[in-house]
Image 1 (cartoon, rainbow, N blue to C red):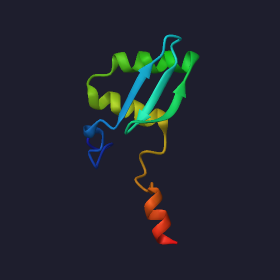
Image 2 (image 1 turned 60 degrees about the vertical axis):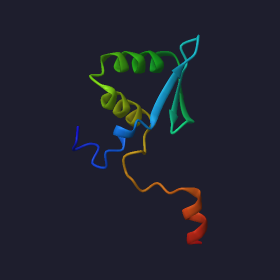
Image 3 (image 1 turned 120 degrees about the horizontal axis):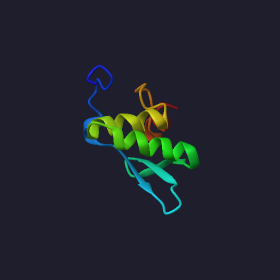
Length: 84
C-alpha cells in the first residue's frame, strides 16, 4: 500500500460517499461531489467497499474509481490564474 500512496494523501481520508434510497452512490472528494454511480457500477462499488480491509483500502478504491487522482499534477484554479 505504501508504494501506491507515496504522499500519504489517503491517510487524510479525502474521499467519502453517500448512498441514496435508490442505491445511487455519490462520491465526494474533500466535500465536493465528483462522481455518481448507478446500477451495476454502484453495486460493484458497494461490494468492494464491504470487502475492503481498512479505511485506507476504502480510500484507494474510491480514488481509483474517480480516476486522475494519482498523478499529482492537478492544479487549483488560483495557480492557473497566477501563471498566466
